[in-house]
Image (cartoon, rainbow, N blue to C red; front, side):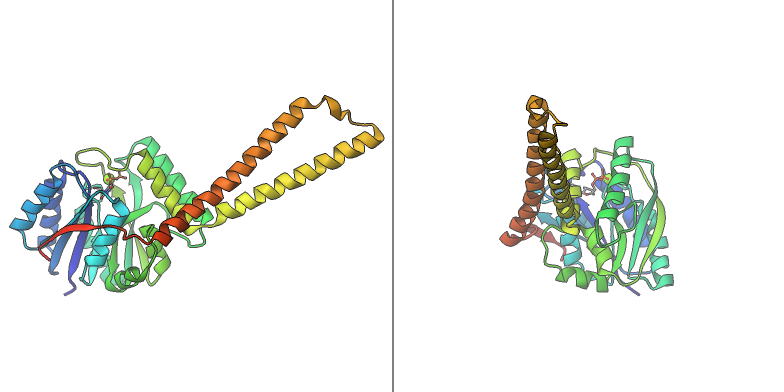
Length: 310
Ligand code: UDP
Ligand code: MG
């Protein structure tokens, strides 16, 4: 029987953690497989730490990793994958938006298809507001058109991965990990599982707009150099426009069909426009330099303060 680990990152989840544990544990007890839950406390400032320690003290099948501070959702999941030694792992959110009751179906699909990855596709996102649904939909489609690796649409980190995927994942050197993208990139046999994304049972989202923006731009910068190419194309178009205008005004002067002196407005607008094009292009370049800077520093993705039940 294959051993299963449920990897759950938590950041300030005091309102949901008990209920989350109760429902997950109930499902795990119904399985014939040996199981464990691995919580990663991503530097919570509320009672999450205390509650997780309580759970770990009462249940030896619960492992807990406490980070030294808040490093983010992706580093937390990375730590979970790195510390998992089971044959199979399922990555889930703490807020029960990914219902643990689906675990048996996901497992049997894995068994039936002999899949290395079962990625869970959101048929609907009941729990999220219009803004989140819209931006998420856009994000997955833009990513797919920009990236050389193709990703399944509307798929988060909620998925089952096997030990082969975990081993390959462990070999990845990059620090800014966009996990769902990297798992697609690793390959092997990956099959979809369709489900309904539920409402958060309690508490607020831990992904405010600025974190969402950082997550999305990271994904784009790490998986695509199309923005650089677009920036170059923009420069190219600007040069062509400049050349055409120059030719037009010169010929106009010679043949007298253009009266260029009166063009203060046009000159100022052109300067502003091309100044903008240049800044934009330099900005795009700067983003990639930022990524390089981040990678070259080679800082660890997260720092562990304490581990329980390992
Ligand atoms: N999370 C985390 N670190 C963070 C932000 C979020 O570990 O900095 C966890 C959070 O506790 C939850 C999961 O990542 O288990 C997804 O976050 P959330 O449900 O708030 O995001 P949403 O579903 O609103 O996109
Ligand atoms: Mg959520």
